[in-house]
Image (cartoon, rainbow, N blue to C red):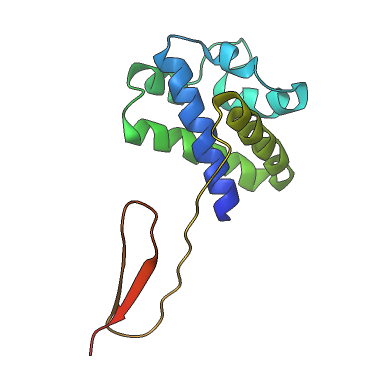
Length: 135
């Protein structure tokens, strides 16, 4: 899974978690998106009768629990692996969320280090990545 998709999944789950913390329902969360997007993601979160699936019920009980958030992310990843074309709907959701929240910038750092005895360091402020070689 590429970093853009991973970032989009994080954005969607974070927005969902925020909605659940505000005592909103999954249905209220879905109101913010287009019909095509909702048609794809609705079955991930809701059963056919409209009730919430277990993974969402668990997240609703403990929205700050990282393992509950990761469980929701894992379900989304699984669905994208089953249907790679759905990635466009995930990207659309992330874009809509960014517009709603005002968070339109994303910083991604990618690093590949090869060799023996190397280590890396990056400050938490998003500064430069420094790579050192142990000799």
